[in-house]
Length: 84
Image (cartoon, rainbow, N blue to C red; front, top):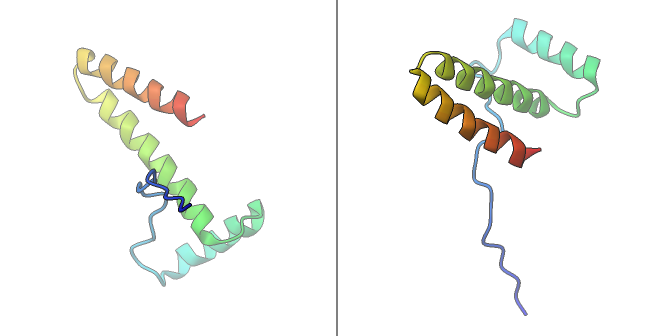
């Protein structure tokens, strides 16, 4: 019997840097990877991408009307609880 998986996560999990060979960024990434014991720089990019999405959602929530802010906060709480 053939097993087919139809449920896949097609969302982005990390974002590569715009300038691949920028010396200051490469040095700081290497320092962070060594300090926290990450396997590769992709793990660092994944955390940076997650933090940027949280910051973006927080800034959008602060710049909208109070009614929209309540509905947006409720949707964020639902996403956060399902991810945990």
